[in-house]
Image (cartoon, rainbow, N blue to C red; front, side, top):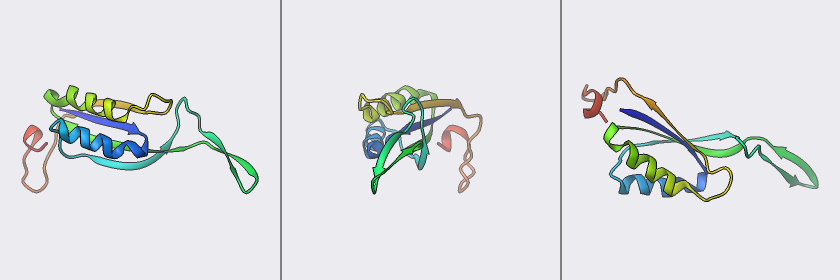
Length: 112
């Protein structure tokens, strides 16, 4: 099993959710976060004063998938979140050694 963490632009969340659902992947967690990468923020003008916005609003999507669904998951997120502009985000994949569904006690693939 793998944990997929994707940092995407906030307005792409619904597109990503729909793409994952179409790929047969259910269940995800979305968290509003702030950060920057190569984008390095931007400057804004507010009431005549210019200031730098270092941390940009992003959404972090987390889900755990079986190894069989990993490629479909990554392809769905990549296709749905891409705008072609800087700041589209990143996908991180890590190994998951154990999953337990609290309600039933099911473990691993059965719990996903």
